[in-house]
Image 1 (spheres, helix red, strand yellow):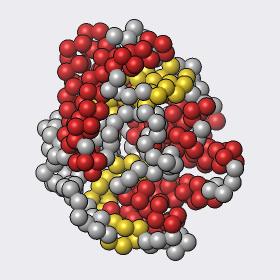
Image 2 (image 1 turned 30 degrees about the vertical axis):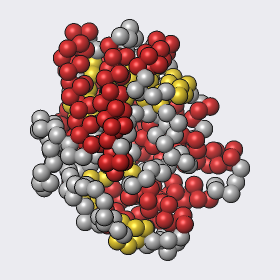
Image 3 (image 1 turned 135 degrees about the vertical axis):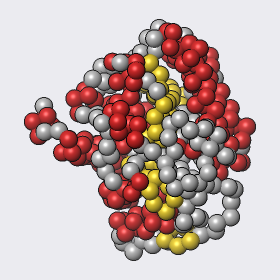
Image 4 (image 1 turned 120 degrees about the vertical axis):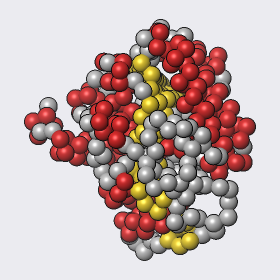
Length: 375
């Protein structure tokens, strides 16, 4: 299980993160910078306004490269110039509803983008470890109660989910055809729904809730009975970094991993909205909104047995703590809306770093000693 001293192993290492301007990519970049990594990001402009990337002023604190994963020549040039040791591929069109509006663009980014990143890794002389992050939606979903395991069929329903299934298959082919012979350690990670401060995406329950409470109106929940596994964004990020490290130490760790919370952290969207509005306070409330829209699964759960057995992993923050931290971050953001840009950056960065260090402290309290914490 990832410890503080494990994160220190990234100090001075060159890490390339695609999709660093997105929500999860910004959290990952901040975490790596906090532990002294030399981080290069490759992505389009932030997909939202505001964005966590801008609020943390990451453009000034890392090597941030504007680029499209569909542009192979540009991607290859960045790999040649930066010579990364580790690569984490997060760049994607990540929204189900957007994939119905633009299936061609979704497949181009999520499938050919994966082909291009695999090509860049294949032709790199520096990469030791590569992780492609996909989604819990890659599986053929029969909406059963038990969680899906890593050896089950990949066949996502909607264009987003299906394009991520294809991204997995592309990576599997490159492993068998090229990476295994080259000795490059490669894995994929199928992550469940993440929540946390700084997510401003459209068509996601927590960002929708944040916009509503900041506007002083009830949160609109389209499908209050849909069940999803929820985890704080730091939970999968810790697993991603552990995979990157472990598979270099022993290539037998390279594989395909579900990264999801325990079963008790699977909630309906209505329950999540209730917990968030309660944690936020200030009279926040929610109500059932317009349910019309394209197909979305009503029930989806992953089995996390493999990462438990392989890495001794267990979640640090349950869904209640994840919601509380998300509400706390949102309040800090609300309080900085009328201050200067510099003051806002300082407050947002302090809160984000506080949560990262608190999460690490809780991880140590679970399984390690105080002496290890103080090292």
